[in-house]
Image (cartoon, rainbow, N blue to C red; front, side):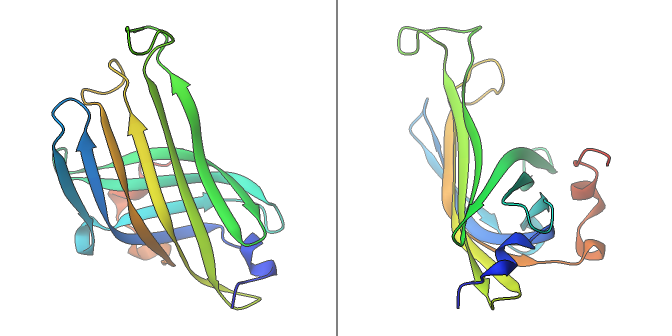
Amino acid sequence: MPPAWAQYDIAGWWSGKGTYFQGDFVTGEWTSLQARGKKVSYLYISQGPTSNTGIAYFLIWDDASQDYLLEVYNLFIKNNVLVLFVPTVFDLTTPTTDFPSGPPAGATIVLRPIGSATTVTSMSGYYTEYDMETTASPETFVRMGPVLFTPVLVSQVPQLAKNKLPAP
């Protein structure tokens, strides 16, 4: 049953499991990133109890740095659809022939809350990110995949992940 009013009560920590596929725009190679076990992703949602907007912090485990990568999203909720988005931005400092306004980057997570009319027990959806910037990151890539979020107690969130969030 899709949650009715519960969709507005999703603030807090969520753990996310999934398999993300990452493609490199330069080499054309694809890799698989497992978000399971100790490499699970985390999502922290900051939102008022009756608000349809907010901020979400998505943390993805990175094997290379042995740390979480932080992505900050805007949140919008309407009719049992949650959209987390990073609007497309352009790196104006590095225009190219392909991108006269600079290379683009952006991200979206679309989620469907699952549960009862009063409680969201999980959120299922799809994650996509693309980054063609040349100055903000060393690679140009696309990352995508299905994700399933479930509520998690703050005590079960690794301190390394908690440390990535801005202080309240």
